[in-house]
Amino acid sequence: MSLLEGKVVIVTGAGAGVGKGIALEAARQGARVIVNDLGVNIDGSGGSAGPAQQAVDEIKAFGGEAAANTDSVADWGSAQKIIQQALDLYGRVDGVVNNAGNLRDIIFHKMSEDDFDAVIRVHLKGTWNMSRAAAPHFKAQEGGAFVHMTSTSGLIGNFGQANYAAAKLGIVGLSKSIAVDMQKFNVRSNCIAPFAFTRMVGSIPTNTPEAAERMKINMRLEAGKIAPFTLALLADKAKHVTGQIFGVRNNEIYLFSQPRPIRTAHNSDGWTVESCLERAIPMFQPSLIPLELSRDVFGWDPV
Figure 1: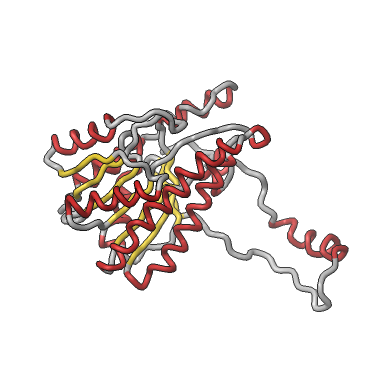
Figure 2: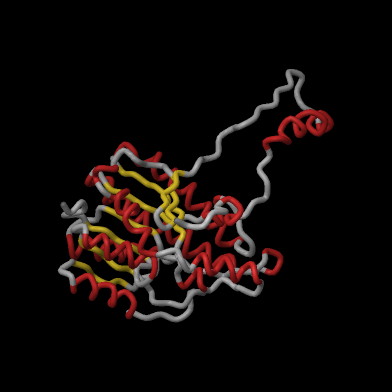
């Protein structure tokens, strides 16, 4: 049975990698798909209609229905056009997968304002633009689903990605807010942290033996493996799942924890700077979270 039959799904950044895999599988599951991709370089420069159209051609080749779009998610007006294209062609929109992204990796103390703004604009602002553009239509039809791509760079940590990490953790907060604000309209919003070898991952420097070894592991992570769970979250059978953070790595699916109080310190007389240092911080010391990186937490090979 086609689990997305009759639905219209928009996938951003769908000209290659994770996004393309999601778009193709959405069509195989019966959805009509808007394949959005600027066809730009990793840093956001350039642009071509080729990648989006190629994905559409592949979908049509196996009998699916899709249309290409090259508008930028980073621009409010362009995001509105993406949603409008779905409405004009197919009369509705049921799911939005916010996957478009770029990279400007550089160590924090050398990162420029443009490096920071460029990544925030595509990832975080782009996710806001697309979600906000779709929200009124989801509300009117009393149903819809968002899936936003986050990253363990924000959930856990990584070197040289302050811009990317800030954007990806911001997306988590945005997703939760969407889920809370729109639950009464049967609109759900979830995040996935995908582990996959894409051209973005392939652009990460490998100038040390350790980095080169990690890249070998990354190359085993199949981009197409992200699609099934992404589309499961768009299906009606998952209508009770919202406000969650998941991860997908090859054949593994994770549910991530979310911040909650884990230790409490109380002083009936109130706190002073000295008592905070002498009592509160020592009480918390055993539970302080270490400065781990994603590779420290996911220390086993993908299965």
